[in-house]
Length: 72
Image (cartoon, rainbow, N blue to C red; front, top):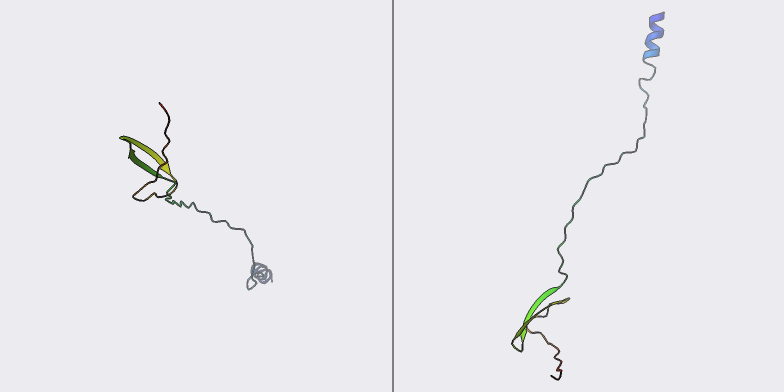
């Protein structure tokens, strides 16, 4: 009789589903590189002198310049 009771106690949870909930976090590091043009370094000559400037746009093959004349 003791063996029967022990067997039933040992197997009483068999056949029943036990559901556990557990929060799981899976994190990973992601490197995302992006190339952006922030400006155009432009070198031009005017009046026998060389100038360099940075423009926020592509000036193309020709560049309009503003010339100021100061008295000597």
